[in-house]
Image (cartoon, rainbow, N blue to C red; front, side, top):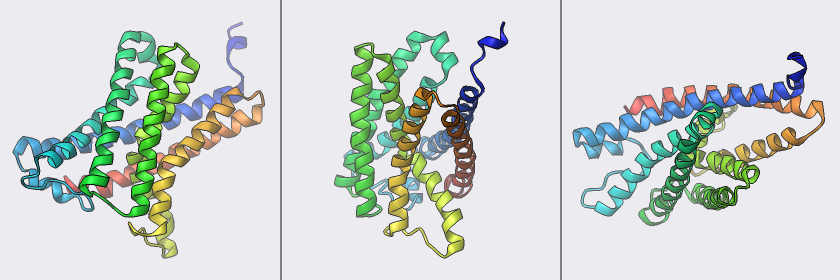
Length: 267
Protein backbone atom coordinates (compact mmCIF):
# COMPACT_ATOMS: atom_id res chain seq x y z
CA UNK A 1 0.00 0.00 0.00
CA UNK A 2 2.72 2.44 0.96
CA UNK A 3 4.75 1.61 -2.14
CA UNK A 4 1.80 2.56 -4.37
CA UNK A 5 1.74 6.04 -2.84
CA UNK A 6 5.29 6.76 -3.95
CA UNK A 7 5.64 9.13 -6.91
CA UNK A 8 6.54 7.48 -10.24
CA UNK A 9 10.23 6.95 -10.94
CA UNK A 10 10.54 9.84 -13.46
CA UNK A 11 9.12 12.28 -10.88
CA UNK A 12 11.57 10.98 -8.28
CA UNK A 13 14.47 11.44 -10.72
CA UNK A 14 13.35 15.02 -11.40
CA UNK A 15 13.04 15.73 -7.68
CA UNK A 16 16.42 14.15 -6.95
CA UNK A 17 18.11 16.24 -9.64
CA UNK A 18 16.56 19.45 -8.29
CA UNK A 19 17.55 18.55 -4.72
CA UNK A 20 21.12 17.71 -5.71
CA UNK A 21 21.49 21.01 -7.57
CA UNK A 22 20.09 22.97 -4.65
CA UNK A 23 22.50 21.27 -2.22
CA UNK A 24 25.54 22.11 -4.37
CA UNK A 25 24.24 25.65 -4.93
CA UNK A 26 23.77 26.07 -1.18
CA UNK A 27 27.35 25.01 -0.51
CA UNK A 28 28.65 27.40 -3.17
CA UNK A 29 26.55 30.30 -1.97
CA UNK A 30 27.50 29.76 1.67
CA UNK A 31 31.15 29.87 0.59
CA UNK A 32 30.38 33.17 -1.16
CA UNK A 33 28.65 34.53 1.97
CA UNK A 34 31.62 33.44 4.09
CA UNK A 35 33.91 35.39 1.77
CA UNK A 36 31.72 38.50 2.02
CA UNK A 37 31.67 38.30 5.81
CA UNK A 38 35.42 37.71 6.07
CA UNK A 39 36.48 40.27 3.46
CA UNK A 40 34.14 43.15 4.21
CA UNK A 41 33.60 42.34 7.89
CA UNK A 42 37.34 42.11 8.43
CA UNK A 43 37.92 45.51 6.84
CA UNK A 44 35.17 47.09 8.94
CA UNK A 45 36.37 45.44 12.15
CA UNK A 46 39.97 46.57 11.72
CA UNK A 47 39.16 49.94 10.18
CA UNK A 48 41.37 49.11 7.19
CA UNK A 49 38.89 50.30 4.56
CA UNK A 50 41.69 50.78 2.04
CA UNK A 51 42.02 46.99 2.09
CA UNK A 52 38.69 46.83 0.24
CA UNK A 53 40.59 47.84 -2.87
CA UNK A 54 42.35 44.46 -2.92
CA UNK A 55 39.75 43.22 -5.41
CA UNK A 56 40.56 44.46 -8.92
CA UNK A 57 38.06 45.99 -11.37
CA UNK A 58 35.87 47.33 -8.56
CA UNK A 59 35.73 50.90 -7.25
CA UNK A 60 36.00 50.16 -3.54
CA UNK A 61 37.02 52.57 -0.82
CA UNK A 62 37.63 56.15 -1.98
CA UNK A 63 38.84 58.58 0.76
CA UNK A 64 36.33 61.37 1.30
CA UNK A 65 33.55 59.75 -0.75
CA UNK A 66 31.09 59.14 2.09
CA UNK A 67 28.07 58.49 -0.15
CA UNK A 68 29.95 56.20 -2.51
CA UNK A 69 31.67 54.25 0.26
CA UNK A 70 28.38 53.81 2.12
CA UNK A 71 26.64 52.58 -1.03
CA UNK A 72 29.49 50.18 -1.79
CA UNK A 73 29.64 48.69 1.71
CA UNK A 74 25.87 48.52 2.03
CA UNK A 75 25.56 46.80 -1.33
CA UNK A 76 28.18 44.19 -0.40
CA UNK A 77 26.87 43.46 3.10
CA UNK A 78 23.25 43.29 1.97
CA UNK A 79 24.30 40.93 -0.84
CA UNK A 80 25.41 38.47 1.82
CA UNK A 81 22.13 38.92 3.70
CA UNK A 82 19.92 38.45 0.65
CA UNK A 83 21.85 35.31 -0.35
CA UNK A 84 21.31 33.74 3.06
CA UNK A 85 17.65 34.82 3.22
CA UNK A 86 17.02 33.35 -0.22
CA UNK A 87 18.46 29.98 0.74
CA UNK A 88 16.22 29.86 3.84
CA UNK A 89 13.14 30.43 1.68
CA UNK A 90 13.79 27.37 -0.46
CA UNK A 91 14.16 24.74 2.27
CA UNK A 92 10.78 22.90 2.42
CA UNK A 93 11.22 21.73 6.01
CA UNK A 94 11.73 25.30 7.22
CA UNK A 95 8.67 26.51 5.30
CA UNK A 96 6.51 23.80 6.85
CA UNK A 97 7.85 24.17 10.40
CA UNK A 98 7.89 27.98 10.58
CA UNK A 99 5.41 29.36 8.01
CA UNK A 100 5.30 32.80 9.68
CA UNK A 101 9.10 33.05 9.55
CA UNK A 102 8.92 32.04 5.88
CA UNK A 103 6.52 34.90 5.13
CA UNK A 104 8.57 37.53 6.97
CA UNK A 105 11.84 36.24 5.57
CA UNK A 106 10.29 36.40 2.11
CA UNK A 107 9.40 40.04 2.65
CA UNK A 108 12.95 40.68 3.84
CA UNK A 109 14.42 38.88 0.81
CA UNK A 110 12.36 40.83 -1.72
CA UNK A 111 12.91 44.20 -0.02
CA UNK A 112 16.67 43.71 0.32
CA UNK A 113 16.87 42.38 -3.25
CA UNK A 114 15.37 45.66 -4.48
CA UNK A 115 17.79 47.73 -2.37
CA UNK A 116 20.80 45.73 -3.55
CA UNK A 117 19.67 46.09 -7.17
CA UNK A 118 19.14 49.84 -6.95
CA UNK A 119 22.50 50.42 -5.25
CA UNK A 120 24.05 48.20 -7.92
CA UNK A 121 22.67 50.48 -10.63
CA UNK A 122 24.16 53.47 -8.83
CA UNK A 123 27.57 51.84 -8.37
CA UNK A 124 27.81 50.91 -12.06
CA UNK A 125 26.33 53.92 -13.83
CA UNK A 126 27.07 56.74 -11.38
CA UNK A 127 30.15 55.71 -9.44
CA UNK A 128 31.70 53.96 -12.42
CA UNK A 129 32.50 50.53 -10.97
CA UNK A 130 32.66 48.98 -14.42
CA UNK A 131 34.14 46.02 -16.25
CA UNK A 132 33.07 47.10 -19.74
CA UNK A 133 30.01 48.38 -21.60
CA UNK A 134 28.79 44.92 -22.62
CA UNK A 135 29.04 43.64 -19.08
CA UNK A 136 27.42 46.82 -17.71
CA UNK A 137 24.41 46.35 -19.99
CA UNK A 138 24.16 42.69 -19.01
CA UNK A 139 24.28 43.49 -15.30
CA UNK A 140 21.65 46.19 -15.78
CA UNK A 141 19.30 43.82 -17.63
CA UNK A 142 19.78 41.36 -14.80
CA UNK A 143 18.89 44.10 -12.32
CA UNK A 144 15.78 45.18 -14.24
CA UNK A 145 14.52 41.60 -14.28
CA UNK A 146 15.13 41.34 -10.52
CA UNK A 147 12.86 44.35 -10.00
CA UNK A 148 10.19 42.91 -12.32
CA UNK A 149 10.06 39.46 -10.74
CA UNK A 150 10.43 40.74 -7.17
CA UNK A 151 7.37 42.92 -7.70
CA UNK A 152 5.46 40.07 -9.37
CA UNK A 153 6.38 37.69 -6.53
CA UNK A 154 5.19 40.22 -3.96
CA UNK A 155 1.90 40.92 -5.78
CA UNK A 156 1.09 37.25 -6.34
CA UNK A 157 1.72 36.52 -2.65
CA UNK A 158 -0.64 39.33 -1.65
CA UNK A 159 -3.30 37.88 -3.99
CA UNK A 160 -2.58 34.43 -2.47
CA UNK A 161 -1.83 33.04 -5.92
CA UNK A 162 0.87 30.77 -4.55
CA UNK A 163 1.46 28.90 -7.81
CA UNK A 164 2.43 32.12 -9.58
CA UNK A 165 4.24 33.33 -6.45
CA UNK A 166 6.49 30.26 -6.44
CA UNK A 167 7.43 30.73 -10.09
CA UNK A 168 8.15 34.46 -9.77
CA UNK A 169 10.01 34.05 -6.47
CA UNK A 170 12.27 31.35 -7.94
CA UNK A 171 13.01 33.57 -10.94
CA UNK A 172 13.83 36.48 -8.64
CA UNK A 173 16.06 34.24 -6.51
CA UNK A 174 18.08 33.04 -9.50
CA UNK A 175 18.46 36.58 -10.83
CA UNK A 176 19.55 37.95 -7.45
CA UNK A 177 22.30 35.34 -7.50
CA UNK A 178 23.53 36.54 -10.89
CA UNK A 179 26.79 37.84 -9.37
CA UNK A 180 27.44 34.40 -7.88
CA UNK A 181 26.60 32.64 -11.16
CA UNK A 182 28.96 35.06 -12.94
CA UNK A 183 31.87 34.07 -10.72
CA UNK A 184 31.40 30.34 -11.09
CA UNK A 185 30.69 30.89 -14.80
CA UNK A 186 34.04 32.64 -15.22
CA UNK A 187 35.77 29.71 -13.56
CA UNK A 188 34.00 27.10 -15.69
CA UNK A 189 34.56 29.09 -18.90
CA UNK A 190 38.23 29.43 -18.00
CA UNK A 191 38.54 25.67 -17.54
CA UNK A 192 36.91 25.05 -20.92
CA UNK A 193 38.30 27.93 -23.01
CA UNK A 194 41.87 28.35 -21.75
CA UNK A 195 43.06 25.03 -23.29
CA UNK A 196 41.67 26.34 -26.61
CA UNK A 197 43.76 29.51 -26.34
CA UNK A 198 40.77 31.76 -25.63
CA UNK A 199 41.36 34.35 -22.89
CA UNK A 200 38.55 35.70 -20.70
CA UNK A 201 39.22 39.41 -21.19
CA UNK A 202 36.78 41.66 -19.31
CA UNK A 203 36.28 43.67 -22.50
CA UNK A 204 36.09 40.67 -24.81
CA UNK A 205 33.18 38.72 -26.28
CA UNK A 206 33.89 35.61 -24.18
CA UNK A 207 33.39 37.50 -20.92
CA UNK A 208 30.29 39.29 -22.23
CA UNK A 209 28.87 35.91 -23.20
CA UNK A 210 29.55 34.54 -19.73
CA UNK A 211 28.01 37.65 -18.19
CA UNK A 212 24.77 37.27 -20.14
CA UNK A 213 24.69 33.52 -19.54
CA UNK A 214 25.08 34.08 -15.77
CA UNK A 215 21.44 35.17 -15.55
CA UNK A 216 19.88 34.00 -18.82
CA UNK A 217 20.99 30.35 -18.60
CA UNK A 218 19.65 29.76 -15.04
CA UNK A 219 16.31 31.32 -16.08
CA UNK A 220 16.14 29.05 -19.13
CA UNK A 221 16.88 25.94 -17.06
CA UNK A 222 14.23 26.98 -14.54
CA UNK A 223 11.61 27.35 -17.29
CA UNK A 224 12.50 23.88 -18.57
CA UNK A 225 12.13 22.57 -15.01
CA UNK A 226 8.66 24.14 -14.73
CA UNK A 227 7.68 22.49 -18.02
CA UNK A 228 9.03 19.14 -16.84
CA UNK A 229 7.03 19.42 -13.61
CA UNK A 230 3.82 19.91 -15.59
CA UNK A 231 4.61 17.34 -18.27
CA UNK A 232 2.95 13.92 -18.29
CA UNK A 233 5.78 12.45 -20.33
CA UNK A 234 8.13 10.25 -18.34
CA UNK A 235 11.12 10.95 -20.58
CA UNK A 236 10.75 14.72 -20.09
CA UNK A 237 10.96 14.43 -16.31
CA UNK A 238 13.81 11.92 -16.49
CA UNK A 239 15.84 14.02 -18.93
CA UNK A 240 15.35 17.17 -16.85
CA UNK A 241 16.44 15.32 -13.71
CA UNK A 242 19.63 14.24 -15.48
CA UNK A 243 20.25 17.79 -16.74
CA UNK A 244 19.94 19.10 -13.18
CA UNK A 245 22.34 16.42 -11.95
CA UNK A 246 24.94 17.52 -14.52
CA UNK A 247 24.28 21.16 -13.56
CA UNK A 248 24.89 20.23 -9.93
CA UNK A 249 28.33 18.83 -10.76
CA UNK A 250 29.18 21.94 -12.81
CA UNK A 251 27.98 24.19 -9.99
CA UNK A 252 30.10 22.34 -7.46
CA UNK A 253 33.19 22.50 -9.71
CA UNK A 254 32.68 26.22 -10.41
CA UNK A 255 32.13 27.02 -6.74
CA UNK A 256 35.27 25.17 -5.66
CA UNK A 257 37.30 26.93 -8.35
CA UNK A 258 35.88 30.35 -7.38
CA UNK A 259 36.66 29.72 -3.72
CA UNK A 260 40.21 28.62 -4.54
CA UNK A 261 41.13 31.27 -7.12
CA UNK A 262 38.82 34.25 -6.48
CA UNK A 263 37.76 34.38 -2.84
CA UNK A 264 40.48 32.72 -0.76
CA UNK A 265 43.49 34.59 -2.30
CA UNK A 266 42.20 38.06 -1.29
CA UNK A 267 41.48 37.14 2.35
